[in-house]
Structure formats: C-alpha cells, structure tokens
Length: 492
Image (cartoon, rainbow, N blue to C red):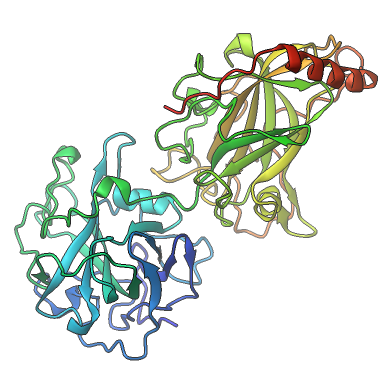
C-alpha cells in the first residue's frame, strides 16, 4: 500500500498499474513516494525527479508483467479515500511524458529513454493532463516492441505548466512502475539520458507560458524513441460509444447502421445545448450508413463499449441513467421530434444505478420499438448520462457537469401502426440545472429524477397494434429476401 505524508487539494500521484486496461490493487508494482505524497517535485536538479523518491529499493516491489508491443495501464488519483475520486485539478494543464530505464540501473546515470509524449490536442482543445482527468485518471502506454526483454522502471510524469506571466517552472508529478517485459524483439537499448539532467530551469518546455498558443508547445527532454509513435499510444479507459445493434436476436456487424462518430468516438458531450448532443456524429446525413429493418413491437439490443468488440462498457465510476429515444429520420433530429421509448435511473433501496446494471451486462440493454408507431425510417438514439462530475453545473469550470454519451442508428420500422408520438428537441430536452442533470452523486441521496420527457406508452397517440407485431416480423423476413443487403457503412 502507498502511504502519504500530506495531501494538497490540486495534486496527484500514481495509484494503480497493470496491463491492457486491467490494473492491480493500490500500490502494486509502484515505487512509493512517502516524502511527497501527492505533492509535486519543484527542484529540477533533485534526485527525487527520478521517481518522486531519491532513495528506493525495488527488491520487494512486485513486477507487473507486460508484453513488448502491449499496453501498460496506469491510473492517477488525488487521494485514495477521496469520495469523488478526483485525479487532479483541471487547472493543472500540461503534457504527459513516459520514460523507461533498465531496472538494474535503478534509474541512475544515463539510463532513461522516452517512449511517450502528448501535449495539447487541438482537435478537442485539451492538454494531455485534462484528457487523463476526463478518462478517470487512466492512461494506456504502448511498451516498445524493439527493446530487449527484461525488467524495467517505467517513469510516468504529468506536468502542470505555470500560470501565465509568473515566470515559474512547471510542477512535475513523476512516479515509477516496476515491470517485467516479455517478447522484446530488440537486442540493444536506444540512446539513454540522465534524470535529473534532462530538464533545466529556463527550458521552454518547463517554463511554457499557458497564455501562448498551446499548439506551439515544445516538448522538453530527449527525443521520442521512434519505435513508439505518440499518436498510437493512448486509448480511453473510462468512456463509451454505440458499437452494435442486435435485432430480434441477431447481432449485427460492428458499427452497422450507426451514424459515424467524432474521431474521439468515446468522448462525452459536455454542453447540453450543443447540437452534438443529438447523435455525437460527424455526419448526421451520412450516405454511407445502412438502414436496418425492425418490426414495430420487436426488441432491439443496444451495445456500447469503450473501444469496440467486447471491450469494457464504461468506468464503473460513471454512474447515472440510461435512456433511448426515437425521431423520424426525415427530421434530421431537428425540432420537437424526439420521443423517449426507454429509461432506467436509480433504485435507492438497493443503491443500484442503470449504469451499474449495464456494466454487469457488459454494455448491453434491451428496448422495445413501440408497437403502434407508423412505419418508416427513424433515428434510434441510445444515451448514457454519467453523473460523477454533476455536483457542479456545466460551465462552472472545464470539467464540471454531467457527461453525455449519445449514439444513433438508422432503422426502418415495419408494421401497420399510425401513431406519431409527440416529441421534444435535442438539444433542449435537458437544462444544466435540471434535477436529473445537476445532481450530487456523492451525497447519499436515495431519489433521482430521470431527465427528459416521459417514456412514450403505445396507444397514447393513436391506438395499439401489438397484435400485428408477429405479422410485421414475417413481413420483414420476406422483405429481407427481396431487398439486396447494403454493404456495412464505411468507418471514416
């Protein structure tokens, strides 16, 4: 277990390490830093710059096994017993840098080579530290393939760059993980560098004024080892997106009939007034997206994952409700067109959230297409709302507010219904101060109001045709025999 001397409100330290998204218990494989706790190292010439500990032995530290070419997963926390499980202050903007050294060196002398660096992401206007915070403290780093197998120190480091105009150095948050690398294809190490020694006071990368254009940020330290291009190293291990539909028991190919997503497909929408809240799509009118046929009254299973396939659904800390809506496709999702067909929120007696259930179900949930709606083309919208930051209203700071994870698919509903349910606008159905949006997940509340309109009940706007569901299913099967199957949509 890690021990801490003190805890500063904005700071952070490494708590968990493992491989390929699975982490060990707190402190396993991690070099302890009892002198600092979660406080930063400020003296760039200090021996503590190696691992936030100048005098340590790795003799009794467990080695985390990891394959060369595989991912080392690390997780930062402010303090272990923090009820909100904060990572660090969102104001601590800066890069992330990861280095390695042969364990036999204990990190002393010319021992270190850089395997990862990430600074400012102009596509989403966030620094690496902010992206780590958004990912619930998780970061995946690829271990280079072309290094020798053996035992290594992996040095993780978050930077907090100085406030504009202060002329100060950045704050450094280094930690070290002890790993055993198997399957390495290399016979020698790249050029090695000393820590301390790679950073100096006055270096542009450690005194970078955050008031400047962040896209001009110069990384400090040695060059990146080219076996590990930075762009391919990081995956999000907290978020989620719509990956599959299952219609009447038949699971479709991944992303078939779903609208194309942002490049950062599993990132949340934060602004409830943004048009991205509809479907988080890069192309609402995509001509490459197939339309899947579904009988009215039948079951559709939605499947959300972090990174496709059968990967994890979402971080268990991202508790909140799950909702599903429909809208006529011809509306393009604009106007008062969205009607809710499913919702699940919170059971205060058992302290179980909808997200808890879907985590257990590995990202799957079932909805029933209303039996009485008119046949035609529709958008089917699944949504997870994560409330772990919702104790603050959106706009209070960059990380405040509920997180929205919408995803849409195109479906064609068959049947003989005539109902056209009334709808609400998205965006517009949620407001930042709605009780189901501004909600303190950590106060032990036993009630929760699901946001948005009530669930549409078949028969509420034109009479039920549930008896025709079986006939509609048969009609669909006949239609499928006659209708040439479109190719699955191309992923942009």
